[in-house]
Structure formats: C-alpha cells, structure tokens
Image 1 (tube, rainbow, N blue to C red):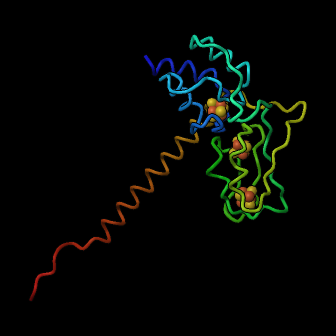
Image 2 (image 1 turned 180 degrees about the vertical axis):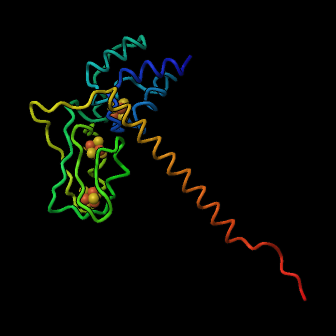
Image 3 (image 1 turned 90 degrees about the vertical axis):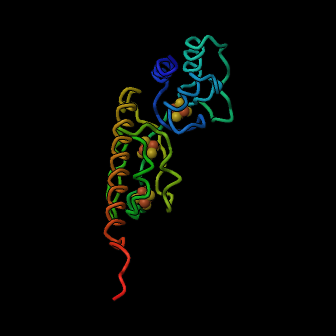
Length: 185
Ligand code: SF4
Ligand code: SF4
Ligand code: SF4
C-alpha cells in the first residue's frame, strides 16, 4: 500500500535526482513522504506547483518551500571548460543520469540533452572547470520521465559493476588463500 503511494508521489517529483531534499534521490524522498516521515515542501526543482500537487495527493496543507533546501529556479545545464579539464574522470560516477561523456586522461563533455541540472558534478571537479549555465531558448530540458529512465539505467549499471567487482574480489581471495596446512616431513 505504502509502496503504491510512494510510486504515485514519485510520479509528481521532477526526477533531477539533485538530493536537495536531503534524500539520495527522488524515489527515497517519495518513500519517506509515503511513510509520513518528512514534510512535503523540500523539493526546490518541483517548486510551489510541486508542493501543491503533493499536498493534494497527501491531503496536507500547501506550504512554502523550505529555504533550508534551496530556492526555486529553473534547472540549468552543466558545461565543462575544455581547456581546463584534466580528464581525471572524477565527475563521471557522480552524475545520476550518465550525462558526462569521457574517459581517463581524455577531455570530458556534457551531453546537454541528458543533463538534469542537478549540480552534483560541480563539487567533484578538482579544478572547478564545470559550471552551470541557463538553457538557451530552444533548448529543452529532459522530461521527468526521461530523467527517471536515465537514472534507472545509471543505477542498473552501477549495481552490475559493484557485483562484478565483488565477484572478482572473491575469486582473487580464493586464488590467494593457502590450500591447507603444511604437513611436517
Ligand atoms: S528533484 Fe531533487 S529535491 Fe526534488 S525530490 Fe528529487 S532529489 Fe529531492
Ligand atoms: S552533468 Fe552534472 S549537472 Fe548535469 S546531470 Fe550530470 S551531475 Fe547533474
Ligand atoms: S572532474 Fe573536472 S577535470 Fe576531472 S574529468 Fe571531470 S571536468 Fe575534467
């Protein structure tokens, strides 16, 4: 029942996965709302319209956005200054929708049609060469449904990599382990 409610709440969230609500993504925030653990005014990208929709679904009073979570504004798009990028790849794993393209020691760039504007990559860059800019007129941001699909794909890939690493580690441990106690001659 709560799972179903969490799904309906999640459908009202913008899916930028920015973590400003204090949860590690939209779905965990939706679950906390379904469990009655948190206020419904903690999503800056959703803004006043989002709070109103949540209040209607949950039968609560509309509230002003909690300023501790940030302020309402249209999400921007990340941009990487080409001349400054070291190719360190630290920004790759933090992007919740795999919008950054590049490999170790190669110039990185942002696939702008995929970027949710979450800003999570900014802090990961050791040379501060990632900045946010407003989307240009004709440039539309991805929809919430697209963001969710990209985030699900990202999480699926991350889980598969973690499984592969765990399996490799366990195989290495088995190879390194002594086969049994040495017998005295
Ligand atoms: S868009 Fe950001 S603040 Fe809003 S629910 Fe999703 S992760 Fe939380
Ligand atoms: S490129 Fe940066 S701002 Fe854009 S979605 Fe990825 S982490 Fe967020
Ligand atoms: S973290 Fe910064 S320097 Fe490193 S690859 Fe990303 S944009 Fe380039």
